[in-house]
Image 1 (spheres, rainbow, N blue to C red):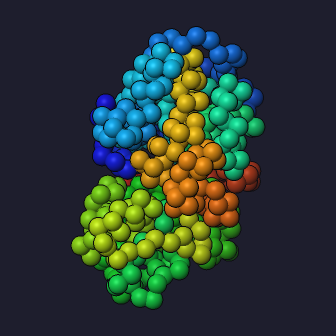
Image 2: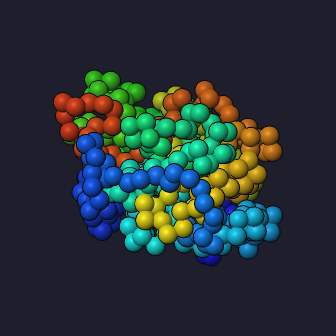
Image 3: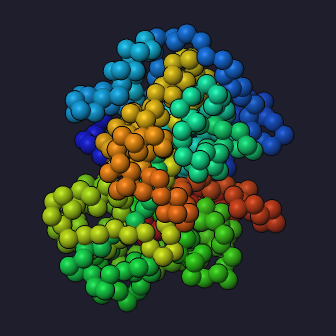
Length: 398
């Protein structure tokens, strides 16, 4: 199992040419469709005997067997208790995970919000029978039945964990302390050339969120539902920002190193980056600005072609159990999804705001942009993710 070092999230939702073939707006399925365009896929009705193995596609650090650190092992107990051997393929990006799930060789995937709807509408994952996942009862309610893990009141996965994209700043350099995302979009910034942004098409949503709060005349209600005018305004803002940027980061370790060296003093970050930088005595803080932030909430999903569906469901229940969920959240650096995990790791839950409902009210979790506007509008078409990827590639290469 090729798992990266502790807390590393190989999280690059990149604009590559092959992505277009995988995107929701252009995907097709040979499965029969329902009236709402969803492929007709049956959920598992009852749990049977395990098949002896489960094949998983997951982010680095989500499936640990103790080989990286013997203190972090939630695989071995699962294998002993269920008889299901865990085989894991670490995915380097959401695009890769979507492609892997289309092969039909994997039973389970840990999907981020920019992949989940592609998998659902592509017919690659099945609805999840939450009655067969007892630990689902203890998942924080504000993670259940959300736009990225359900459709029309039907659950398509089990929430894994969540995090917010924060504004990082060097406290010994950036003064006064910023309170707004405007700090990274100010064309007259004294920190020009020392500002960073996340390297992904999904970062377009960060620009849209800022415009949603500062230019209400654009009518943006949800940063992943942008009509052409709103999308063009977001891209224009990112083009204005580009001369300020020293680095578009994808590798969190490089970002921490940049904060430490001072080549970066301001920009988008994750909580784990802040924690690691502080552990290296860097004078840095991370805040959720007044506009709120984008963020992620990952989902465990079951393949519609799963060869080992019983072991797959057993894994879903295990990975969100209090002990396993607390361990993976601590190892990776995010808020757990199971409320009972906080009884085991109170400090962890405080650091990552796991049970602070107010904190998450203005966090807009990553989602897959589609032509059918996710904010409910029916009088316009929204720009699909394929065009986000194309625009981001053009911006980065200009």
